[in-house]
Image (tube, rainbow, N blue to C red; front, side, top):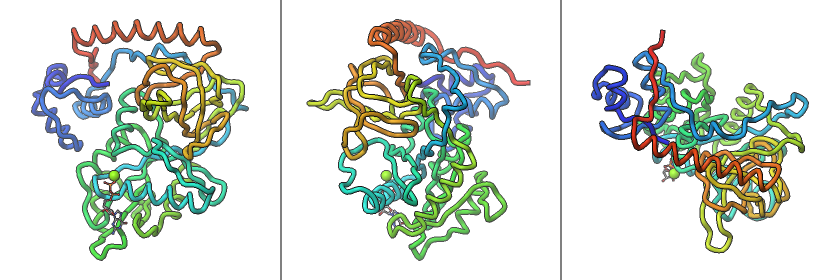
Length: 371
Ligand code: GDP
Ligand code: MG
């Protein structure tokens, strides 16, 4: 979902488009005057100019209003982690190392297929879910759609390089989303590595590491050699403990989750990676997801093994969608097929009206001056 352009924002706030573009640049974003900005950027920019952005209601606001979770249903759930950082700083290498080491230590058979998220087991029994998204596109796309999926960001910075524009962008995204950051100073095996320099640059970017009296945990690693990775996982788990992450583990509540990514397979139809957030998603459940609907035909783990159900923080592949859902769509289980179909139809009508309105006027409804 994209909203106003710098040009439109400038008019609304009574500043020049150049001011907006420069502010975007300072936030690590390169934009042109008529480029549509995501919600998060607009929130940040508006704040920079002393405004608070207000957006017209999202289509998703018509989603089922989730009931409150009963206290006795809540249990500790695994953290969901996204790895962010500048290109070539080692995000893929780190994800690969974590995935492969877990496979070696754990069950037989590797993760053969590409799945947008996977779960690893640390110290024998503690789980961490990783979102395996190219760069931070999915993170920002999901955020822009109002979906909060990431609990912790691992910020990878190559110790032989510098804090770079995408490092800053990642910091800004994480901070805007209120997501804690754990810093991984990568490529520590290289002779050119200079972790102290990176820590200085990070402090200038508002990320003061713990050993310098700040609040951010930091670990030197080599994704290539596997150095410091288990220490890094330990720090992620510590962060998760401090946040007291909990999920609804009741077998009774209708399950819900977030669509991480989807693809169309010639034989199987739509295959979607779903991160379950509440309750247990079960085979046979009717559901709505964004503009589409379906009935769960099969659930598979990251090894392609069929499982009957999946609970909070568990990433799974789901079959049974009528159409392709979008990343960030909320999947909600409905009691009956009929109920799912009615809601999906209602949403389609709203979506059409919404698209029509968008094409006729600026989507940013109002910007109120902040006291
Ligand atoms: P990404 O763009 O952030 O996903 O970065 P990649 O994981 O693709 O890594 C970029 C390059 O850095 C590759 O050539 C990696 O082999 C190399 N690399 C990643 N981690 C390390 C490390 O810890 N040490 C060294 N020496 N090279 C690394
Ligand atoms: Mg990569």
